Length: 587
Figure 1 (cartoon, rainbow, N blue to C red):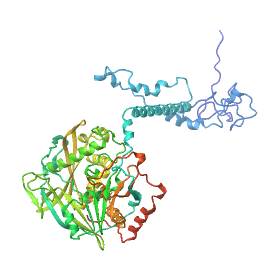
Figure 2: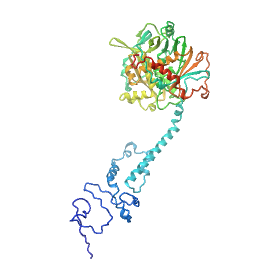
Figure 3: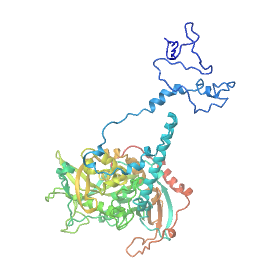
Figure 4: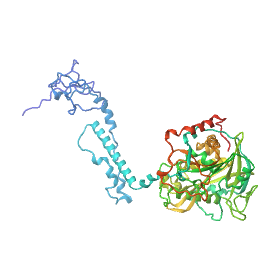
């Protein structure tokens, strides 16, 4: 029987592997290849690979390679110029994953009968992973490439589904229409980009009340305690009349104009549209009449200013189908209807009213009118120029034997899928998130309400949160909450600068005072952030004026873009050259 000779086993007291041959007491290893380098390790180091046959070892210019070495098989052990050992530990740690040994929830409970081929299986990159053994770094790179391909594939499928279903009609609605058809006989005088409005600033002194008309009912404070859990149905007030009278049809303003009380006349609705013009997206128009040395800002009958925009500043436009209950026009009518009913429901309707110097100037005797007070106020714009505006407040509340005026407005929720925030779930716990979403989607509307409250010197503005009973029912609504804000604090919260507001009004007034006597119209461009001034015939927008809609290609086109800075910038500079101040103004 042939015996087996173990031979001498060397012991290395300094580390792993055979001892260094340079030491005196070391034992030489027989049959040791002469070209196999040894990488020393300490006992705390992680061991890596000792040979790599996949590397490109035939390159003589590789750092650490020996050109005289002709033995390719021995070069597989040469790691003198390789940093694999330095990065091996990092690669091992980065590729480490904790295995989840918990039982799958899909096999228990009511999900037991769910098919195994659910849609997520299609997007799982692990089903397409190669099973061939690879180097660790190559496997990591391959995994990243697979993940990127799957992510791009999911994005393509998502965009394809959106374009074939919901996104089709909404992309068409991104092309907004002008609020008024531009006729061929109209002469465009100037166009002002919104970028010039942001630089304007003008300070006005405190206004004075010339006259207060109408009557106010007291606010019902029980509505401040409404929550989504104890919501209240929105009532309908068909017997109460609401008036949307323009400037020149107001008998009080005509009387004040005859008495030469001011030079410029307007309403708070028109002024707020001008003050918040840079925030607007939809097209709107204001009729300007220059009569003698006086200036009147009017709105057309059935103007867009009588309605309330919904989701105007949202990133996702609304459908443009007029018959759709969620179209921009349908929601505007619905919002105006909600706002009127809300402003009357939150009042104490016991017949107790606060009356003023004169009754409602637009109501007939014995007619039931909505609770509203018209404050005719005068601001000083220049040494010889005053502005009179009719401002509205809807209610009054008595606190500590002092009466405070309130403005009442309602935000409306039509479908949580559009805003992404469900009011019934978020109003109690995350009211700030709901308001932030509304500020993003309805920045212009909220800014106009705030400007109107500042113009009327309201002590408090009440915002109601009104939602549909069902997303597809646009006739029945419920009040979910009512929140009060001080106009000045709310203006600073939404970054509404009163000096800039009056700077915009002052620049437009100065521009219009330079025009000849006649009728003009100021139109917000439907697709660009700018306004244009057109000279129109004297009988334009009258009852006997026939206005035929024109195709888009036949309407008067604006001049080239490079000309838009001309007179607009000159007007802005004229205002800035005057004695303007950046101090906040009390409205």
